[in-house]
Image (cartoon, rainbow, N blue to C red; front, side):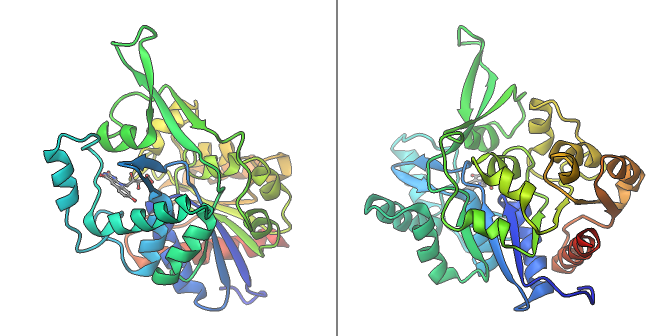
Length: 333
Ligand code: FO1
């Protein structure tokens, strides 16, 4: 943390695995010096076997609450899969989604509360009573939004069909071309309780190395959110999810291609755009392997530094968080 007045409130727009890993480092760095609010993507959510599954909310909650399976990066540690096996034995589809027995309890509690009339934000607060993630975890919206991906399908007259994001990622392993990303319900959604205030009242807003299309991009697509990020008094700093031309993990490369954005650290910064030119970021961190792209980012009106961005452990992510807050302090002046 720089000697300048350290931020008291930090808001992070996060997806799942990548965002959660970064948040571990941020919390290690700021400890209880700052309140961290996470606005999480909910368009990966899926209704499955009558249950509402919220992968990004749960990944942040489990990772910061100590329940995550660190190898998978999602779902619960010490997991078993008996319910999944039994469903498959009945021939119940989808059988491709990894529904763990411990994880199932979260979806049962969530679905019961939703059916009792509680909004997703209230459900998330209730679940966090148990996990105590050390952040305020806010769904980007309480409305139903689901990302669908348009892929090739020879059986369709149009030659294409839309599949739920989870089918694209989990069943198809993002190995087929994504022709379009369709965030169903996004335009009709409204920001969840506390979301806009968390952005406009923050001392710093961070865009972690989450998927810029289906995670951060979707959060920015909730009507009102992009405007709040563009106009907040807080400096906005992002960390590149692309390192040396690769997304490291996940499917950012495939989805950037679907929206016609090059898979590069500077290209993603350009996609977000400089706030001074109508975009959403003031600062951007690229990995040391992409130091050659710093000038391109700076030319786009975005302050840029190259630092190690591989999230190998919490020390590494804490160093990334420190670099992001230092850059935020620099651009604030
Ligand atoms: N990812 C997989 O690759 N395979 C799975 O079977 C799987 C199941 C799963 C269950 C609950 C959950 O919260 C996440 C799960 N994920 C699985 C990860 C999930 O698809 C991604 O983390 C996000 O949707 C993308 O960020």
